[in-house]
Amino acid sequence: MKIGIDIVDLKKFKDNISSGGNTMMEKIFTKEEMYFAKEVNKLAGIFAAKEAFIKASPNNKYKMNEIEIVKDKNGKPILKEPANVVEDGEVELSIAHDGNYVVAICVINLK
Image (cartoon, rainbow, N blue to C red; front, side):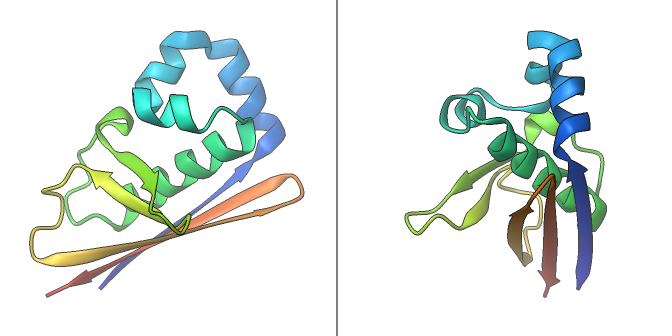
Protein backbone atom coordinates (compact mmCIF):
# COMPACT_ATOMS: atom_id res chain seq x y z
CA MET A 1 0.00 0.00 0.00
CA LYS A 2 1.21 3.50 -0.83
CA ILE A 3 -0.24 6.72 0.63
CA GLY A 4 0.15 10.34 -0.38
CA ILE A 5 -1.41 13.49 1.04
CA ASP A 6 -1.37 17.18 0.12
CA ILE A 7 -2.81 20.39 1.52
CA VAL A 8 -3.39 23.61 -0.44
CA ASP A 9 -3.84 27.13 0.92
CA LEU A 10 -6.52 28.61 -1.35
CA LYS A 11 -5.17 32.18 -1.18
CA LYS A 12 -1.64 31.13 -2.16
CA PHE A 13 -2.99 28.84 -4.87
CA LYS A 14 -5.16 31.60 -6.33
CA ASP A 15 -2.23 34.05 -6.29
CA ASN A 16 0.06 31.51 -8.01
CA ILE A 17 -2.53 30.69 -10.67
CA SER A 18 -3.19 34.40 -11.31
CA SER A 19 0.49 35.25 -11.68
CA GLY A 20 1.24 32.18 -13.84
CA GLY A 21 -1.59 32.72 -16.31
CA ASN A 22 -2.67 30.24 -18.97
CA THR A 23 0.80 28.74 -19.37
CA MET A 24 0.84 27.64 -15.74
CA MET A 25 -2.73 26.33 -15.97
CA GLU A 26 -1.81 24.22 -19.02
CA LYS A 27 1.21 22.76 -17.19
CA ILE A 28 -0.99 21.64 -14.31
CA PHE A 29 -4.47 20.85 -15.65
CA THR A 30 -5.93 18.97 -18.59
CA LYS A 31 -8.48 20.67 -20.85
CA GLU A 32 -11.27 18.58 -19.34
CA GLU A 33 -10.29 19.57 -15.79
CA MET A 34 -10.22 23.27 -16.70
CA TYR A 35 -13.60 22.97 -18.44
CA PHE A 36 -15.46 21.21 -15.62
CA ALA A 37 -13.72 22.74 -12.58
CA LYS A 38 -13.82 26.46 -13.28
CA GLU A 39 -13.91 27.53 -9.63
CA VAL A 40 -10.59 28.09 -7.86
CA ASN A 41 -11.45 25.81 -4.94
CA LYS A 42 -12.29 22.93 -7.30
CA LEU A 43 -9.05 23.40 -9.23
CA ALA A 44 -7.16 23.49 -5.93
CA GLY A 45 -8.76 20.16 -4.99
CA ILE A 46 -7.68 18.62 -8.28
CA PHE A 47 -4.17 20.02 -7.78
CA ALA A 48 -3.99 18.56 -4.26
CA ALA A 49 -5.23 15.17 -5.53
CA LYS A 50 -2.55 15.14 -8.24
CA GLU A 51 0.15 16.01 -5.69
CA ALA A 52 -1.11 13.27 -3.36
CA PHE A 53 -1.11 10.78 -6.23
CA ILE A 54 2.46 11.68 -7.24
CA LYS A 55 3.59 11.20 -3.63
CA ALA A 56 1.88 7.79 -3.43
CA SER A 57 2.82 6.55 -6.88
CA PRO A 58 5.54 3.90 -7.01
CA ASN A 59 6.66 5.62 -10.22
CA ASN A 60 6.32 9.36 -9.57
CA LYS A 61 7.75 10.61 -12.85
CA TYR A 62 4.48 12.05 -14.17
CA LYS A 63 3.94 15.63 -15.24
CA MET A 64 0.92 17.26 -13.64
CA ASN A 65 -0.96 17.64 -16.93
CA GLU A 66 -0.47 13.92 -17.68
CA ILE A 67 -2.58 13.07 -14.64
CA GLU A 68 -6.32 13.63 -14.97
CA ILE A 69 -8.74 13.69 -12.06
CA VAL A 70 -12.46 13.50 -12.87
CA LYS A 71 -15.57 12.78 -10.84
CA ASP A 72 -17.74 9.72 -11.17
CA LYS A 73 -21.54 9.93 -11.37
CA ASN A 74 -21.71 10.28 -7.56
CA GLY A 75 -19.15 13.11 -7.43
CA LYS A 76 -16.28 10.95 -6.13
CA PRO A 77 -12.86 11.95 -7.49
CA ILE A 78 -11.25 9.26 -9.61
CA LEU A 79 -8.00 8.95 -11.51
CA LYS A 80 -8.73 8.88 -15.23
CA GLU A 81 -5.23 9.32 -16.62
CA PRO A 82 -2.66 7.95 -16.81
CA ALA A 83 -4.63 4.72 -17.09
CA ASN A 84 -1.54 2.50 -16.86
CA VAL A 85 -0.16 4.06 -13.69
CA VAL A 86 -0.76 1.19 -11.37
CA GLU A 87 -1.42 -1.82 -13.56
CA ASP A 88 -1.64 -4.21 -10.63
CA GLY A 89 -3.45 -2.07 -8.09
CA GLU A 90 -6.32 0.27 -7.28
CA VAL A 91 -6.16 4.02 -6.74
CA GLU A 92 -8.48 5.69 -4.23
CA LEU A 93 -8.75 9.49 -3.90
CA SER A 94 -10.49 11.79 -1.48
CA ILE A 95 -10.64 15.60 -1.49
CA ALA A 96 -11.91 17.80 1.36
CA HIS A 97 -12.48 21.56 1.55
CA ASP A 98 -12.60 23.59 4.76
CA GLY A 99 -12.31 27.35 4.95
CA ASN A 100 -9.11 28.49 3.26
CA TYR A 101 -7.69 24.99 2.81
CA VAL A 102 -8.13 21.97 0.57
CA VAL A 103 -6.67 18.59 1.43
CA ALA A 104 -6.45 15.44 -0.68
CA ILE A 105 -5.30 11.93 0.03
CA CYS A 106 -4.41 9.11 -2.34
CA VAL A 107 -4.19 5.46 -1.37
CA ILE A 108 -2.80 2.97 -3.86
CA ASN A 109 -3.56 -0.63 -2.97
CA LEU A 110 -0.89 -2.74 -4.64
CA LYS A 111 -1.63 -6.34 -5.45
